[in-house]
Length: 137
Image 1 (tube, one colour):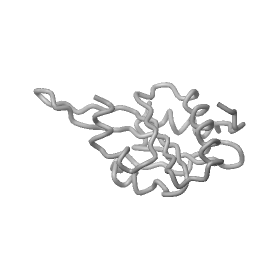
Image 2 (image 1 turned 135 degrees about the vertical axis):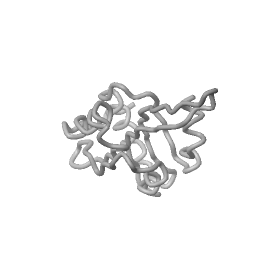
Image 3 (image 1 turned 120 degrees about the vertical axis):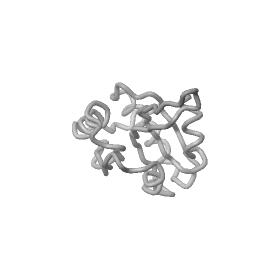
Image 4 (image 1 turned 90 degrees about the horizontal axis):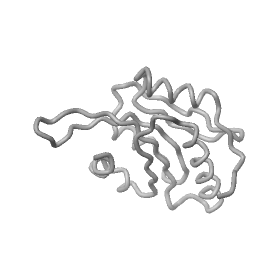
């Protein structure tokens, strides 16, 4: 894979660690700005999966980290929380954006420790809550 030369900002790593260690955020949405991955938006712990999905553009890529909680089907059921890294790159993205974003995601992913699962999605159906739970179970 070609290295796009996109760096990870210190702010991006700090926000990830705040989500992971301090449980400060439900999710962090990242963007590329001036050749580096930076924080675009953070959400409080009361944010929902559906409110997060509404933030994903139909024609541009995004990287996000989400502290995903779900209830297992075990007896007795229990609530489980897992941190997922999401690479959103819909089909509507131009080819050049797809190439640069894939390289950026791979590089960014290597900088994060403590992610339970990485999910690459290009259709909204890839991010249905039931699909995420299935991938995490």
